[in-house]
Image (cartoon, rainbow, N blue to C red; front, top):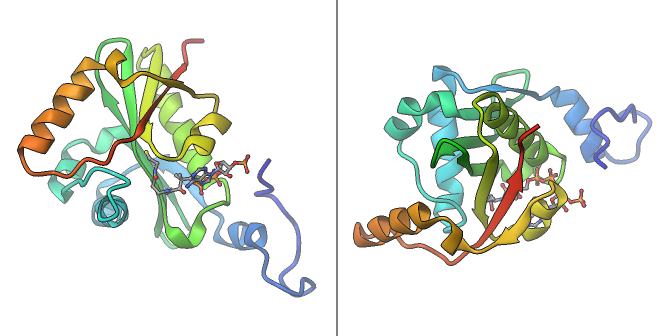
Length: 180
Ligand SMILES: CC(C)(COP(=O)(O)OP(=O)(O)OC[C@H]1O[C@@H](n2cnc3c(N)ncnc32)[C@H](O)[C@@H]1OP(=O)(O)O)[C@@H](O)C(=O)NCCC(=O)NCCS
């Protein structure tokens, strides 16, 4: 478990431990706002450059802002994000899951994915899936490995991206039932 509420004091500790850093940052997980768009796209595209995520333009993010959640620090800096992409009335993809490289391993990824799942529940989706190389991360959140063939529309979207010149690295498909 992540100790986000650690009370280890920066003065007394020999090092500024990462949980203490998170306490200082006081990250808030909330729905994305217009003010987040540039940072959000930059965060996602930083990982798209490594082909870990699909690229997103600022226009794409702005148009789908309702689908994004962010973790921001007290100064409004976007530390992490995730989005929800509808596939069918019952299935949505948890996509664009990204945590600033300086703040990974602190539980922020878990928090933004949980927030995206909460939106999925509120919107009536029964299942979410994600495409990723981060198997341990999605397993820790209760996702199971499934066949990409179960999501023909995702395959079709990949094919159209490849036809448009976007490089797609093979990833695993993870799914989770979220219906209450
Ligand atoms: C994957 C990622 C979102 C995880 O976010 P994070 O805030 O570092 O993760 P958390 O601190 O919430 O960790 C939760 C669990 O996932 C594991 N984990 C963290 N990063 C991981 C990674 N890159 N690969 C596999 N497992 C990972 C942790 O060990 C932790 O497990 P534990 O609780 O058993 O120790 C983050 O590393 C990231 O932004 N990666 C680059 C983009 C990416 O690959 N996104 C996923 C595709 S949608």
